Image 1 (cartoon, rainbow, N blue to C red):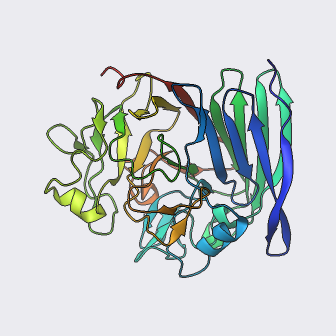
Image 2 (cartoon, rainbow, N blue to C red):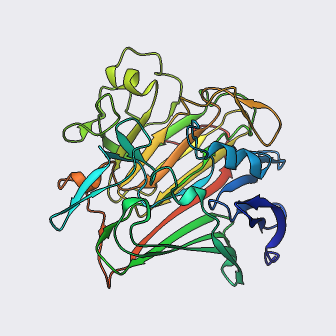
Length: 363
């Protein structure tokens, strides 16, 4: 059955600009609701093993929740948002490109996080609804001027959310620049496969196709070279419940109060990550063109947040799997590069597939 055309509805106003919510999907499959404010995935309904749909991502019930979370001084959680210009942390808010040092705003202690205090998650994007033989999609575009949040070059960004013919959510990113700059884009959706607002995710199983991860210092900036996961609580090469080792006396777990690290994805693996919920049977499979995956176990979600269900979020209410390049890459020549130059095209794609299974996926 062909997917119905996207629908659009008014969702509020931000900074004097109308904000809309778009619904993509097909009956009996995935239904994804996306805001043009911050490119936010507000909800994603997927069937459980009995065919009953349920929302499996965290979000706020109204625009006011997102705007308030983005105010200066707020303990930002980036629920469902598009992140740019640079996802993750840049140490000291500085980097050097072609011999010129650039300074970007500090909003995470001594570091710049997720593009700064006015990153792409705070902007209203231009939206175009798309329907073709490959499914139904929403194309979002944003122009970031030269000097925006301290970054050089005029960056033209296009992100497409597509529910494809295979009933997968496919996110495609594209960007060009008129001057050398650094780019690292991602989506910051939090997942709870048992259902949004249902409790913590510690009993949900996770598998990561990664033999190494990036240990960090106290500031969550990678310290030294990537390290083997073998023999550590960071070994998810076989499926393991997320909470199984959170209490272990590991210094890296202590630094982040849980997991908040970049895993170096193994090349050639058939997936980047898989997560499974024993209660609902939902199985999430993530594939990406990116070299890294930031797994965050929701360590700083607090009871001050109320979700789309009207229930409060607590620690571990969701987990994030952010496909991206490595943290602090502009300052680490040993990491995969994030420089974009005029005439080049930044391109990446991450695909989320939701199916069901009666037991954890085989190792």
